[in-house]
Amino acid sequence: MRILIATDAWFPQVNGVVRTLTAVAERLGSFGVDVVFLTPEGMTTFALPSYPDIRVALPSPRKVAAHIDALAPDAIHIATEGPIGLTARWYCRSRRKPFTTSFHTRFPEYLAARWPVPPWLSWSWLRWFHNGSVGTMAATSSLADELCAHGFRHVTHWPRGVDAQLFRPRPDASFGPLRPIFLSVGRLAVEKNLDAFLALDLPGTKVVIGEGPARDELARICPNTIFLGAKHGEDLARAYAAADVFVFPSRTDTFGLVLLEALASGTPVAGFPVAATRDVVGSAPVAVLDDDLRAACLRALALSRTACRTYAQAMSWEQSARCFLDNVRQATLAPSPPVPAPFLDTDALAKRTATAR
Image 1 (cartoon, rainbow, N blue to C red):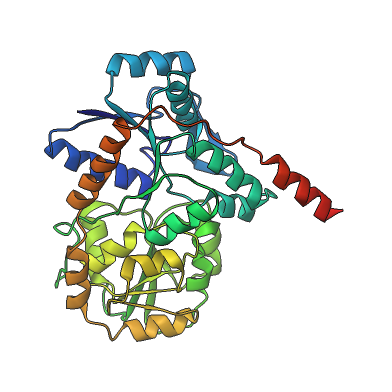
Image 2: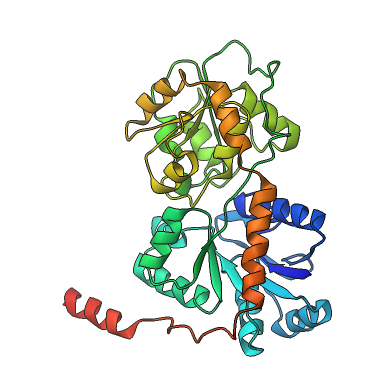
């Protein structure tokens, strides 16, 4: 079986989408599945204003169609809602080919945090995009419920995993004597709510790993925090293992692979009691979730590192890949995609306008 995955998120970006797709593709290959990617590589791209680390592709529909035809995939999965995702969607709809999608990012909240884009408008567009597919994959049950509440159809589950061989306890890993170490890993941008962590009065040392548009400003206003930039592979794994608590201040992530990576390294988690974080840790004694983030950080110091490791080992990329494959196989048996609802719900728009008056 050959599966084509269309994604706007790709190297040199390093984020949860890229890491999920590459990890799953690697495991699918071990199952005998041929995974090919449609990415910005080889396309004209431009950088977003104020976000030079994010490049947006300008795909040619004609070239994309010829490329997909030449690959002759048995199934098509669209991972992102950007220009490449839109072009792949157009290809599938114009040829009445079933396809699946996945929901990785809460763009309504992210856009509203940066520009005056009302969330209802973003949700309307996302609903139109994903309801053209035969199935939309969500990482957690709460996210699936949220999407259904927004009118998404055919929502299925696609769990995430962790490489427990790379991310593991390392007794010799250390940041030095400035303990306890409170670590946060992720993109340094407004949506990650890193300010909530950096503003805490905590003992020991705060360490931040990652890059992003907010790094310079955060480093300027938080001179006592150690900013290490981006880390990968063994270097990142050793950093997780050297920390005493992993702090996850985001309130908008749909999952957070970093949570599983920290837990697999034996490092307990502190965060807010939001749906995505609760879905990852459940009721296991591996995290403290509290609206008082400082209290959560301090209480997490007492959690068992062995329990954290044991909990994360039950979540593998092999399981994630098998679930993805099952979802895609079901899609290949599905009839032609239904006609999606219009991008704009005109009745809802009329009600909003009347209310505003």
